[in-house]
Length: 115
Length: 113
Image (cartoon, rainbow over all chains, first blue to last red; front, side, top):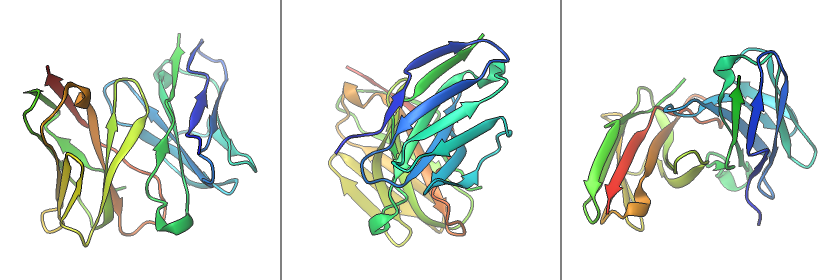
């Protein structure tokens, strides 16, 4: 069983650019959630995907968008980057099977720096 | 949305001592989870306690839940330097089917060797 992986590990962009972050879910998991974590803060929920459909969204603007693919891997896209988008972006997968969907398994994160 | 607030914000202890951190929340919950995060890395699930449970153990971890006070505590016994990390609670509100987690700012635990 492989864990959650994310790429890239680190990324530097400039204001106004667009970025795509990738996540590969743990084997057998059909739900993926994305979180943004600013320095010294807890992770903030961006959105969740279940079977390729958005299944809930936090308080983030539309320039944050996502995709989930048939193999349950996922992308987070951010357009028109702002300085405040600098953060650690975490992907977490979970499974609705067996009633254990509330436990989430996190990847190591992508550190995004916007200059 | 339901969010836990961890207390204290920071805790520094010596190796071998016990560490206790608390979590408070506002509405009825189905369950509450605790996660650990080592510096700059992903979160690791530690334990889940359901609303009908009062105490749960996992190795050196002991979690209690008091639904009447809307609070939970995480006790780490015989702490080790490797326990140095941030700890987050994530209460799951009873009125939502969404599985997304909401986190507070966490408790930063420093275990001195």
